Length: 106
Image (cartoon, rainbow, N blue to C red; front, side, top):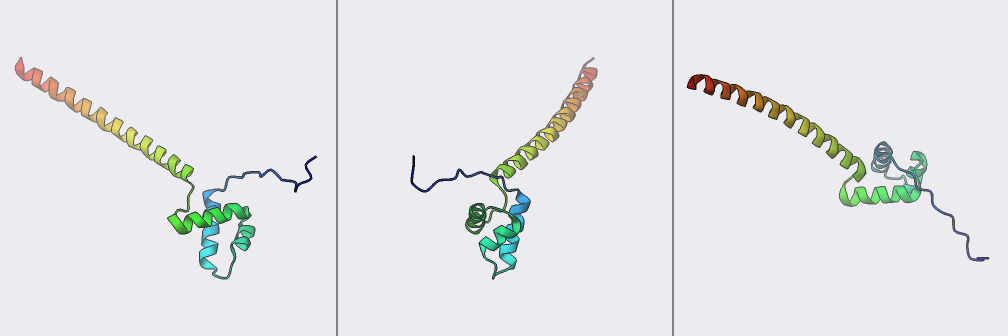
């Protein structure tokens, strides 16, 4: 019924940080390489490659924000785990000092 140009629904594909890094390195090392050629070499959709390259040029970011959020979450979990061990050591020291104080009083 619609005689206008048929539109194709885009399929979205996640681009890994490794693919992003390869694309950026290709563009930086080969001045004569076009973005379309680099996207074909890395098998990344041209529109995605264009967005990755634009973000890299403007922000200097070569990783996706989601992977950075995961890294922050892991770092936070590791930090809280080390904080737990510090608190456990502090509790042990506090109990030891308390028992010394009680033994001095008796």
